[in-house]
Length: 443
Image 1 (tube, rainbow, N blue to C red):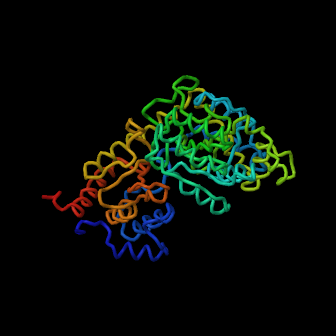
Image 2 (cartoon, rainbow, N blue to C red):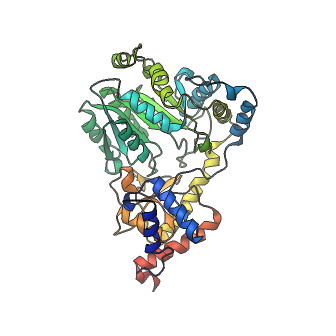
Image 3 (tube, rainbow, N blue to C red):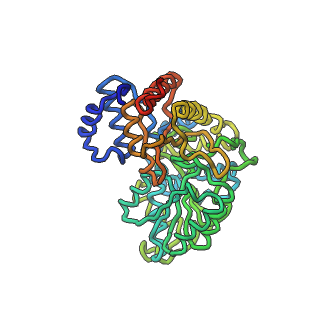
């Protein structure tokens, strides 16, 4: 049954023990990353790396050149303003208008040290606005780190897997949590990490309507901005515009990262684009806690975010601003560049399905999901953790869906680190997996 494994159980068990991983089937992204790297080091046999969602394309050189120019000035000696440089705030405001057709003032576009810092600060602010609302609701599956942030902060959360609650079913499910009147914020990613589903305009309208009715802030994570490649979203100031909850409520914070759309992950640059209505809203509880006016935006910037990172690296802000401006002016087509991920995912899915695997989250209601940065894979008879562990024996690293809040059985696969020379290797390893799990396949 196990004659075709690339790595032996003894070797993997030894490395698991070396890194003190107490539960491999529920290992974090970081633990899987360490495990795969160590096995490569010990054996010289490369892994098919589907674990960490790192960019697999070159960084946008418009950004790096702008940073270099900034570094040649006195910028490195000057602390960045807490609210961010005007150039980046203006560029963010225009970018949101160009691709979402939503109006957010430059004042309400707040630079942060990556969306991880942005969500951390937003969780704090949203759960302190109203003493009765202290809980975050996750529309899962989602990014595990965001729940880890809540553990650090001691903030309670609720969650549900959207798999069986698409379309008209979403309203009742969402309202079943909101009517408890304790939900301060609702968070999801769109397109989704890890499932790559995309909420429809109708679903977003429901989220927005209920957020307004129940006074919850929607945290919309747009890390994969414009990467639903079924529709081309690369024309600034022209429809079709990228779907967003911002069209349906004033209670929103958009998290706009540079990591994937500009392959700029190493510089940790993102924006929180807060609705102007929320930015200027006064919350007495914030005023009492921070001894100020209690205005949401200034409190988030000066009393919360600044305490976490003391601003975002000064020179990086100029790089991010230059990239946003280039995209807005049509000089850099980030949608065309990142569509390479769709081509990779399509080829990988074909190989998995060829060898008896299936896509777990396969539809947006009645429409096949887009190919993109992530996809989900299952294998009949194997649970999330069992499949993740079994694939390790064949030199394929991934993340268990159970770590993302999903109730479905399967793994998250990232296509960013695939290259042309690895598709044949993946094909061979999946064939070996199938031979060991379905011996009749070799007859």
